Length: 379
Image (cartoon, rainbow, N blue to C red; front, side, top):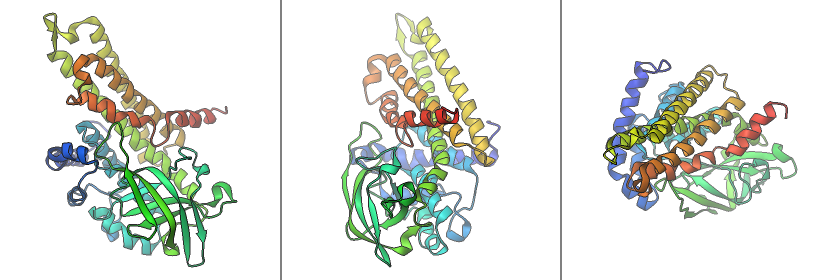
């Protein structure tokens, strides 16, 4: 047992595994074909207590402010390879904005549904011409007195098809640079809010990812999240937490890849003996195991820092970069080790190769992570 986790965490890990085995695995192939999971899955996740752990009890949540539960959910989902449900985006990235900067009325209006799974959330940052550079966004929300008039388009939005609440990053003051960015909550059914196509990706096919457009959408002032003009600051404050979750997914996926490669190397025969007995493959597997253990040690240190409220943006960037790049490296090596079978999508290694490719892109690209680290060196 990892010293970071206690019995209550391991019990929760077993609950998560049971949930994915019972409620997700039997249907996941169909959801991959559909490009989206069932909404019923979200409410079942709510019934299992798998959503929004840190939402206080007064708003319908468990009130458990222990980030280890968030990490366990993400790790176990990665280990199963059942990457469709966007629970992590919902619980670890989006709902925390409402919990942290929402006013009392907003929390009472939105949080109970987020906890139960009846209300699915998304955050709309990326635009066709602005990805990692949030200061380059063009969506505007013009102040009209008692409401904002929102116009713009977003793309690559996780949970974009199913979402009931979308936190939209928009400019409320086009002349104020990053100080003119605000967060507005757009609700399903608002006139002028439209969803485009469910984007076709090379992996994670059951995870709905959409284009969104906003044409003269009337957003009441009561849907402004936090203070006007502070949206960029709010986004920056949450990024270390978001990147640590992506790192958790990266290290768990890496461990799963090593396990499937070891199993294959022991069972697959060539020239009358297991392929793992050949020196090249034996050395390769030795390297894979070592690299994963080193990355796990660094991730665990970052997790401890997060639990103590001391995780820096630089360490979060390092963790995100190291684990996701390792995940992709190992997946490529695993496909090669499996030979022709590694190219067949029915084999888990092929799915890991395809699903994991995005990990070095979302949550901030590897290049952005290196830029953050480089700046900390005074460069």
